[in-house]
Length: 224
Ligand SMILES: [Zn+2]
Image (cartoon, rainbow, N blue to C red; front, side):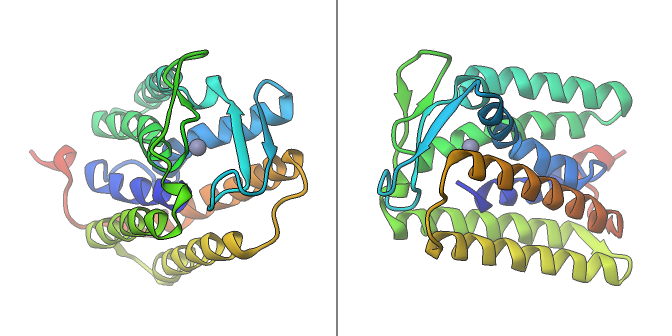
C-alpha cells in the first residue's frame, strides 16, 4: 500500500485537529521509514523480483522490526508517548498510535502473506496486489476519502494553504500511477535511498501547507 497510508494520515486530522498533518502522515508511514533505514543498515532484507505480485516488483521476505504487528504496536505506543510528553493533546497521541498500527492492517490487505505478527511468526496477507483492479478499488477510495475529510475539516488561510495542499494531492496521485508504469528499480539500495529522501520531502511539505490551514470543524478534542 502506498497512497492509502497518506489517506489515513489525512483522515486522522478529523480526530486530532491540533496535531500537524506532517506528524499524522509520519505516523502512518512510520513502518516504511524504519524499513528503508533498516534496509540500508542491513538489519532487514528484501529483493527486487519482478512479478512477485502484479502490482509490486519487491519480494519482502524479512522485515520483523519495522512491519510486524507487535513491533508496530510498540513503535506506536512509544511515538504517542513522546508526542504526549511535549504536547497536552491526548487526541493527537491517540491518532499517532492509530496511524502507526493502521500501517499493518493496510499492508496486510495488499501484500501477499509476508506480514508477520511478531518476529519469526507465521506471515499473513490478503494479496490485493495480485490484482490491479483490486488494488485500485481499495486504495484509491481510501486516499480520496482521507483527503475529503481533511479538506472538510480544515480551511486554507492563504494561497500556500490552498495550492500547497492540492498540488501535494496531485503529485501523490501522479507518483502512484507513474511508479507502476516505470521500469523496476535496479536494487534495494536505490529503493531505500529514494524512499527515504522522498518521504522526508513529503513530510516537510505536508507540515508546511498544514500550517497555512486552520481547523474549521472542531474534532472531539476541541469540544468543551
Ligand atoms: Zn509498509
